[in-house]
Image (cartoon, rainbow, N blue to C red; front, side, top):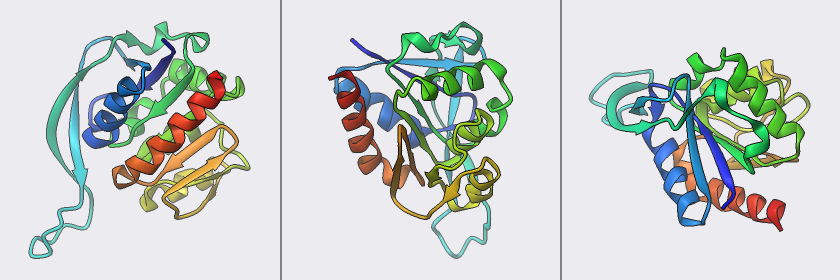
Length: 189
């Protein structure tokens, strides 16, 4: 069974994480969750409240489910994985500084394996230095992160450029996962 790496940290977005986690398992892949340490992590619901009677201009976070990391970033080896899925939420803002995480994401990309990112996950792709000259998408408030990483930001549901696939938010999970699974299946054929 091919392994897919899913790096995360505290405040990873629940829908950005659990939908792909279970969808990949359903498709027959082993999902290996990694974090700064192999321990339990807190996910969050990460959205601007839809109730217009409550003025709130920025993303609000509420506690959600927990997820356990199987391994620490320092113990990852890019050769072990057929691809990587990077979810959003606030976690990427903090874990993007981890040199082992950036190294493994960069190696997976350099090996031509599929690299998927949703929402704030673009911050890790930028830190891993793998989107220069690539067209990518992300949540609009992270467009600057994409551009500072040398990427060409577009506001589209899903964007594929080479082996990099990106999506804006969890609202795009279905087309993101459909495309990511097609890429994984093609790479393993």
